[in-house]
Image 1: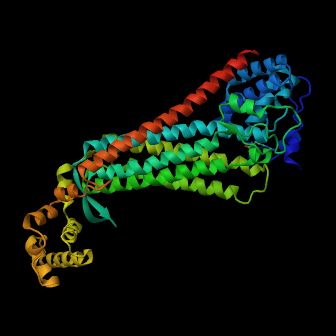
Image 2: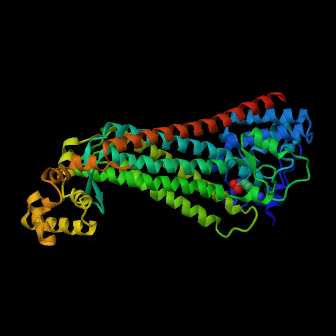
Image 3: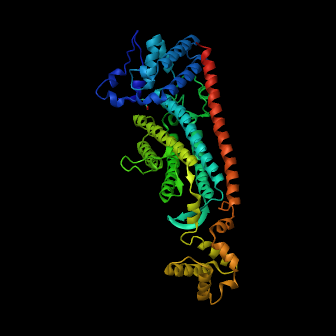
Length: 498
Ligand code: ARG
């Protein structure tokens, strides 16, 4: 049985829609074959694709203006009735065509001239996904703005910085928040890239092997706001790498979110951060509990998105050219991923912008675990000691402090220097410099290299991030405007026939 023979047999007989494909899809596997319910997501997209195709067919004189008018009228009526009114057929494409034929008779079947459901569904999912991707991009921009705004309020709020979850070096809350703003700017860039490769028109590829009709592929692409045509008809109708790319970009963003969520959960546990009640839950039994559930769910969305990506790639792997029905189960992965990730990203933005940071506790903890040790070693290295020797001196002092259960002092450092070098610490540095290096606030301010935690460095990071954010918002607005313009043009063209 050739799958495409079902496509070629859209024959309406008389008043009621009797299509020969019923011979193949009316049996016990009917439900299994059908994508009609899930196709609700591409209902509006399909109407747009139908309209652009019909306008092009009329312009190319493949159908008459009058026939185009009838079909376009019927499509408006189908749209008003809504997806829920559709019945019959394996999917939204057949169901809409049947609904058009029901309204205007066999001439409705001319809508399917010079195309197949294969290029049609590919156009529909690209059309729909680009709107979803624009929403995802917008959400990443809002999250970046929330992070940047919070960072700007905390450019000098000290906090302990960690590696291996162990206190490492003091930093500021602003520096920490900007680390995520910076990662997420790349998440935005990946989504923009995925958008640009999604926004290409497969229409006119037909089943996979083109069509003898004198169609104008550039015209349907322009009417639908696609940036260009996917040239090869086999590639056009069956390629789904745009889904893989979009889903991967979403899964990567979800992974970024999971790290941010995990940090916030840990900081909430330590009392460093207080989530707003709006982003917390309580326990049904323990009345005192305030739990960071929203962030825990955000963290879990990385699992959903990665699962969808894995499911999608596994579905696509090893598919021969060209269209295979497996593809019907491909795009739902991406739609589920985009819904989950957009929701999580928006929640993360809300949680970040409404949280408060416990500045006093953070400052007290900023120097914990001799986190200024690296700064002392840097100081000795700046005075001319090889860094490795300086490291040895400071490590010895740290060990001694641990044994005595005290903090590291200038005196301890001095005796460690004597032990390692047989010389006094103060031959290299003065007491004031040692005290400054031991102080978390001064330690932070000393690290003013580009991208570092010093206030001025973070302020400059923030300024750069605001510029990139503005550029990315422009990129989003340009794409949205192009889609809006195409929608208006298509509506005007349609009006000429109805
Ligand atoms: N519902 C199908 C899908 O989502 C549409 C294309 C069906 N084409 C075919 N030759 N059976 O992929």
